[in-house]
Length: 253
Image (cartoon, rainbow, N blue to C red; front, side):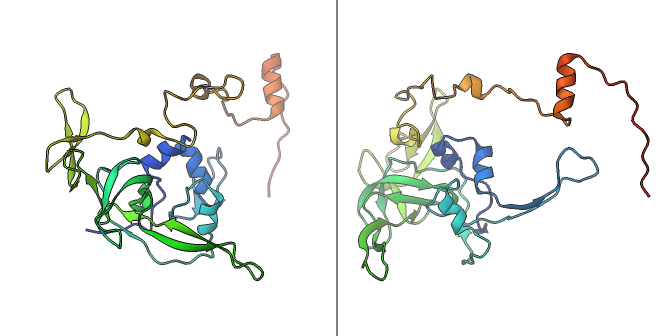
């Protein structure tokens, strides 16, 4: 069964992991809210008018390019996605191309776009693009890699036979979840490149800068408790001043 998604608001787990950013920040970056009721007032129900459907591309959701591609004036074809229960292919995996002029060739996955069931393979499924063309300059022709659908375009390569194979998730005797080739029953380890983020290649190699970086202990600590009151009320509370004046009654007709 194919699910019409038009690509829902939720960003893929691998995308959030690669960004090394809080999921709440990513949501604020790409969501488009046109109107929202104020918070903290019981007379106003929690309601808002916002864009519900987004078109995810090779641009990451927190970038300006993604925002431009999802402007209200942009009209594109509907996108249909096949839901995937458990993601099987990661960055750094060796895969075999199943479609196109590179069919039968093998390459390394350089990027995973989980929101579209896409992977980009280094040097494979390429096409030519002209960049910087205008009236006075003919532009520069570059070779660009097009994405491939993981369900129909690529297959994992068995590390023992070096041939394309189906894979499934299984558990070892120690309870560890691993990928296993169905043809040879060989474990396909998740590559080290899958740990890469925008900030570091590996967690072990990342060194925190005490002067600039916010440590995890401070980042997870709540330092501000929002309350519905004015600045003057905060000053009065800190100085121990109590308000004993009775406000005059006012009437609305």
